[in-house]
Structures are given as structure tokens and as C-alpha cells.
Length: 127
Image (cartoon, rainbow, N blue to C red):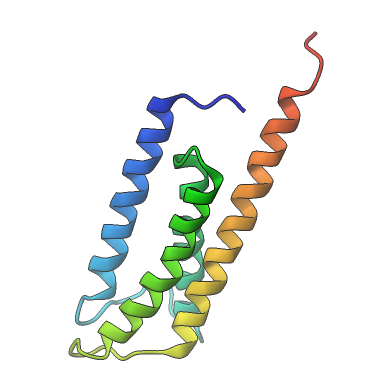
């Protein structure tokens, strides 16, 4: 897969802004979710952290750095859950931290699958 440095930088910027956005929203005193059903917040956690876990695989050239950046999102999720115990109107939740972790692993799997598929296209004969 041929990815230009400009594309990687753009993805890196999106990832950094996404991390900042997640930190901001996680530390707000009270968040109203657009859809409210039993454990809807767990889905939001999983999707958000899947995004944060997937982007480094596209942003970093070295696989080890990409995985380390993605796995650091697990640490971020746990720390933010702990920090929420000090925010009025919020509480720490082991279930949310677990949803964050599952999301990171799902994002790694999804990004890895997409990258593998894109690489397989490169091997196809040109017509």
C-alpha cells in the first residue's frame, strides 16, 4: 500500500484532534447522549475508542509505533474514567473502561483488516 507522507500527517492530525476531543468530552460535567437506551454509552465508548485505536495504524510508518500509540489509548481510557470520579455529575465506571478497551482492540482489528485488503489489491495484475 502506497501512502504518502502528506496523507499520514493528515491522519496523525485527525488522531491528535480526536484524542483532544475525547479528553474534552470525557471531562465535561454532564453529557447528554443523542440516543438513550440501556447501556447506549457503552456503544459510544466502543466506537470512539475503535476510532482512536484504528487511526495510528494509518498514521505511523512503523508497525511497532502504531501499535504502541493504539495501546496507549487503553491507558487514556482508564485514566479518563478515573478522572471522571473527580468531575461533578460524572462517575468512574469499570464497564466504560472495559468498553474503551474492547473498542481499541476492535479498531486495531478493523484497521489491520483494511490495510491487509489494500495491500492485496497491490498484488493484483494490472489490466
